[in-house]
Length: 411
Image (cartoon, rainbow, N blue to C red; front, side):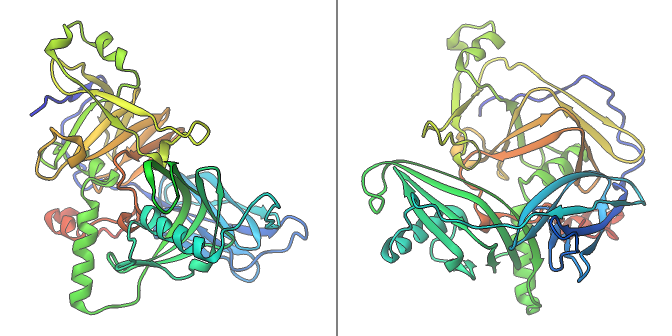
């Protein structure tokens, strides 16, 4: 098995005492969403924290209120089919209700003359690609789009592009959630040949925001099955990682960490060893997040798999309420429940980086970030909608294993 790089703690590392059930305090946010032209309130605006199950809609006067938001900086999205959506970052203070009023501009959808919408037959072919690389369920056995006709497809050279005028309504029976997904863009690039043959290299990328809602009540048997699926998808997730970090059980939980290197030559700079003493490998950065559309090429990250690794510098400290985490350089987080990491293609690989700021996380692994941006980027083509759970989900079984969390609800 290849050697791995572990954390070098360069700041205060306190004993794991007290605060075993520490939780981030919560606050609320309220405000009014109004029309930028008339100044009147807009009703039925979706207001939510992206990729969570926490959201609401504005009333007839444009008022909204979201409760139970853990303290720290959080993104709040405002979406309405007739207006240009916005996403704002705001600081949530413990036990207080923050206020954020916002005005939205009217949205005019125009299809330019240069955009060629594919014919019906081509739409069907394009939709098959979209289902495969966006949903991750090409036959829609467990996850399907309720309103597929909202999708528009067109080609630009060897790029298949998708757009939509309204949010995609997605039912994921696998985990029991309805998703309202606001698609910003979807692009699928095929290197050569006919789109139907899909010859050569293929890369794809998409971006958007969504809100999760629990599906209607199901039988006890179906509920248990969905919960098992949710727990399975929780493993290796960002929240699972910080949960394991909090409880000092990263290795036992299946995580391994190594330095992310963006130039192969840097490996030799980090190690004053002959190249024969260690191996260098590379991993394709998943095009979902890092594909370079202007160049039609992906990028790569290198990592050392043997030899004497250079420790990772980070800050990890504990106070009486929650724990803090900072890191200067991106790292690779490998996850395999079986503990086998020799072949990256058989494990989940994530690029974890923190652009300034500090990560605050509690005993359930829930994170909030202050004065920075935390990126958790899956690198090996597993970021399909079918396999995404709300970031505020926390397994019931973990609460049973930790009595102090028994009264904790999903944030």
